[in-house]
Every structure is written in structure tokens, then in C-alpha cells.
Length: 394
Image (tube, rainbow, N blue to C red; front, side, top):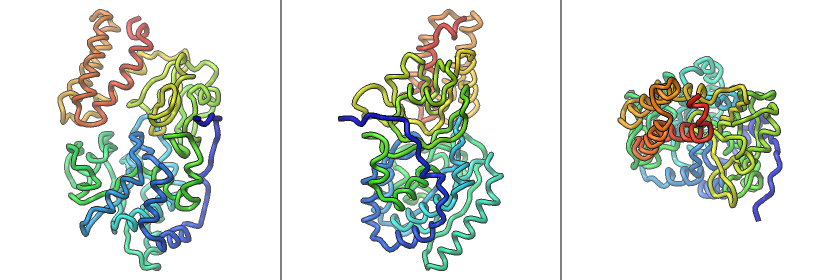
């Protein structure tokens, strides 16, 4: 029987715990296979939105029989409406660094990188001081693992893991073909673990408090807690750590302004859910027994009845059109055509039925675009057009 969900807050991520040295030294005394099994049993999934099992990713990298491996922390937080990772790096950076070092121990990597979003350059000086202190401790205990900051240049596409690694190697930030996957052939052609900031912070919680403590939170297929960046028409904007599995109606009851007509789950690349579907929609990964489950990288934007959904979609498409790397035709041309298309319908230059042709175009993009950017344009486009068609026309 599925667990009945009640909106619950947690404070694992931002809890100020100054025992990272003990956690690191204690963990390094354990067998790497024991640690892998602990992480797998927690059922932690990547908190960037894709939801790949973290333990499996570390296990695959650890099994690669090569001398050089890498650990990368993806701090390229570029999804509109998401602002949680920078807070983690500002308030509890040692949790992230400790998790990276433990990952290095488990996988056999001796080098780690934090790929920091270009707009977060203001974090670099303080973060470097923390890294220097961490490096000194690692040297003291004889642990061979170093961490370096790599500054991005503000490209949204570099949030995609292979485009990020292309950027680090000095090339234009463009996604690679998969396979091979980074666990086999990542940065500099070597096996690489790449996790986002929040995922690494959760692994710290697991290694400190145990897998069961994490597993008992959330619901089936969506274990643990999640950080949510809450913005838009809400009296409570900010960052909140909540258990996964909540219904969207519970979320709106807590954070809405009493007039919420839609919630954008997962930022511009996510889905817009109208009021009539709040009750049947939960926040988590696929596999829920009933209703619809939507994963999210953390962005939760609320819109009330004063907002024009046409303006919202126009803003999203302008963003996608600007941020497309241009490598593949479906995304490069598709984003332009969608943006021009909705404007043409709104201005009466195209009939309303033209929206159906644009929906067909998003289906094509979903199947043929090379990476998640072009594929995910269909999410916001279809959910807005299908649920608020009248606002696209009048």
C-alpha cells in the first residue's frame, strides 16, 4: 500500500554540522563496496531532474579499470527559477567537498572539479578558501584527492553533462552522442562521475546518518527529501527542503496565494500544471501507483490569475531560442519556428489551428533533438498550449 503523504519539512541539507572531518575519516576506513551498497540501498536519485540512480553511477565508474578517473560537481545552475545550489555552496560547502572526496575514494578518482556557473563568479573567492582548507586536511590524513574550480561562461547548455565536459576540455559547449556515457568515457576520455550540487549534499547525509534514515523519507520510487526553489506569485518565496511525493494541491495550499491557477514544475524545461490537475499530480519520479508524477530539478514557479500564459510561454521560447547551442537542426530551427508561430497566432497572422501544427513540431523535436534542451521544449509548450489555448489566441 502506498504511503499517505503529508507535507513535511526537513533540515538535513542546511543543518550546520561541523563534523565533516570525522565523517570523511570514518568513511575512508570502510570498504568501498560497503559504501556503494549503502548508497544504492538508499535509492537516492540524481537531483538534477533526470533521476538516474546515484549509487549505480558511482558503481559503474568504480568498475572501470583505468588509472585516471574524475569527479565533477555540476554547479552550472542555469534552469530558470532554480537558486538552491548556490545556497548550498555558500552555507554548507564542506558537505559537497566531503561527498566528492568520498566519491573519489569509492571510484578510485584522485581529481575533482566544481564546474561553477559563470554568473556565480562572486562565490569563487570564498569557495576557494574552503577548498584550500579541505585540501590541507586531506594532506594531513594522507588522502590523495584534490578539487579545482572551473568557471563556466554562462551557457545554459553546459548544464548538460557532456556539454559541460566539452567546455572543460576547451571546446565549444555542445552535447556529445551517447553512448559512450561519462561513467565509461567522460572528461578527457576517462571514466567520470558527474553529480549536481544537491545530489552530493544528499550523499553526505546518507553517509552520516545511514541509508535507512534517507530511505524512510519520501514515498516509493521517490525516496528522501528535495530542495525546492519557490518563486512567482507566492507569499513564501525561498528555498525549502521537503519530502518527495507531495501532491501539487498540498504544495499550493502551503505556498500559493489563494489564487494559483498554474504551477510550472521543473523550470522552463518542465511542465506547467493547471489548477484542475493539482490533486492528481505528485512531485516525484515515475512509478507512483496512481496519478501523475512529475520530477523536478527544484524550480517551482506559481502563477495566479493575473498572469498571461501567452506571456509566460513567449518568455520561455525566447529563452530556449537564445540558449540553443545550434548544433542540431530540430532544436536550432524548431525553437525559432515555435516562437514566431505563437506570435503569428496571437497577432492574427495565422489561424488558431496553426497551434496544432506547432504541437506536431514539438513532438518531432522531442524525438529528434540531440539533447535534453531541444527535447524538453515540448514539455512547457504542450502543457501551456493544451491547457490555456484561449490565452494563446485572444
